[in-house]
Amino acid sequence: MFYLKYFFIFCFIGFLFESLGAIFMGSNFNSSVLLGPWTTVYGLGGFIMLFLYCFLKRYKLKKWQEVIIFFIISALLLSFLEYICGLFIYEKLHVIYWDYQNMHFQIGEFNCLEATLFWGVMSTIIMYLLYPFMEKIIHKIPNFIIYIILILYIIDCIYFFI
Image: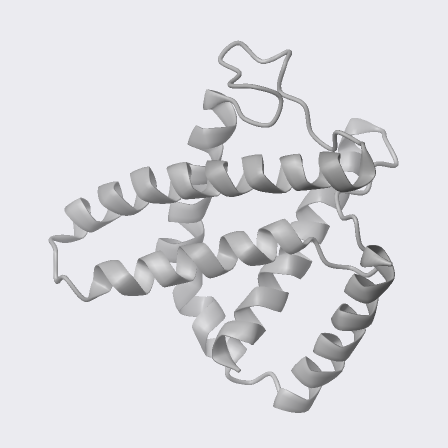
């Protein structure tokens, strides 16, 4: 249940992040292929960050070493996730949801160095500054709320794939 709570929190945070970005950019863009207030790629990314964070904690590294390793690996893993999800969405919907071809250091349609660095910085900030606060809040979310969200999410996914 612990990981499911984080998955949905990151899905929702991603939805808010993308929605606010669209508002500030003056567009009505929706980054989620699903109908609900969740963006799955952010949930998956949050799960990857949490797994990597917990994995690195086991090695009892010096804090600066842990943070640098976390930054590098999370930047690469999240960029790979972004590529896979961008490719999946393109193959399924024939739509490019994000396109980095206008960026200076683009790597194909779905990746660029600027975004890779952004994901590394954001994931490091989230896990090393915000995670301790999130951990206190996450335990207060009742399990039945997560079950309801899970059911709605599954229905949304079924609707998408049909």
